[in-house]
Image (cartoon, rainbow, N blue to C red; front, side):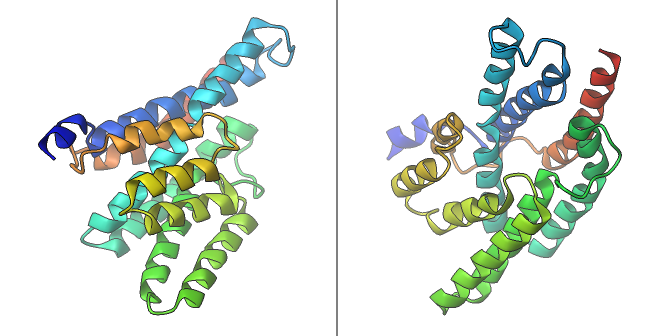
Length: 229
């Protein structure tokens, strides 16, 4: 047991840094490289670079979902957690739309904070109806439907993925297998379960608000850079 614990050397903050870096790389690809001349030319080096950046970025979402589940399991106040996600979902929407759609506001696609928020609310509902498997299933499909209708990042699948991570939380091998299969349509996304498996259960550095602030700020920077190029 001691040997196994030594092998698990990634704290929650370390996972968050990995997710942030891979997300940033992905967003540079989607918000900057994609808009450069020649990016869509299949034989160009820029085209290949774009896809490398996007493939690296697929690692981020599973880690953020895992951290959401960990946050839910360890938070002392889930209501404050949900309110925080909601506030930053609202704050981040204009930067998100500017970075990827070059407009101040659109209704057809919402940022990932909305996915995480709906996922969190779904987990709360599932726990509330823990005596009924049918009602828990209804809660999951309700979360799926809301996220699908709002067209949040990863849409309804994102919520189902969060639920899978939560339901299989205590069985690491089964969780890694099932969730890797579930997200294998994003070819490189299962790689995320390598650092997730190395999670040691510790919070690490206190950086609660770093990601919340980093998300809208980096999107604004990506938009600004794309306008200059």
